[in-house]
Image 1 (cartoon, one colour):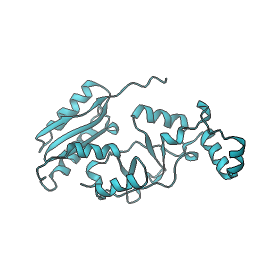
Image 2 (image 1 turned 180 degrees about the horizontal axis):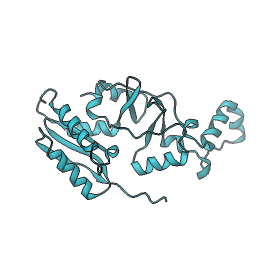
Image 3 (image 1 turned 30 degrees about the vertical axis):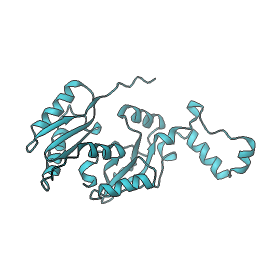
Image 4 (image 1 turned 135 degrees about the horizontal axis):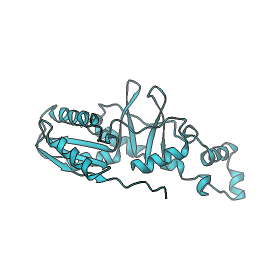
Length: 228
């Protein structure tokens, strides 16, 4: 399998000028631990994750060093820590060196990238544009969806593309929170829905897609954001 077979697309992304509070709400509301940062042309320029928001002035969790550790730390390190704690925009806290892959990258290579770099997600880039993202969860979904029978070449990818394209055209479907894997005509649905009605409609759409033999529904209900 390749990245395009399991990647989440379209991708939840933010702009470099996005306020820190807004990206924090996005992480909570979307149920993700990190999002890519793109410029006005859709090019990947960075990534921001929960780890970038751990030591913040708002929560009084900024790094506090003893006087002797401050002497050992360089001015550059101390300045960078101050920026992380007090910055108001994503561009000042995001990670700029991002590990990426292409749509045709084998999943075995994606798994190696995740392990070698101790990261949780790999943005998928094609012709300079962000086209998807493969997370650890996507790989686990692929494992859970695996079947023993040999797949029919090309048909599973076609089924997945057709189903996701159909759902993106529906005004009620929140596809940013949805992923699907297809193996031997068996569809596994993953992600979150806003209502039981949406969950049922997604399952019905999958069952009605030509070539689908069975649908396994792993969808969960999205918890409302309370602001607490």
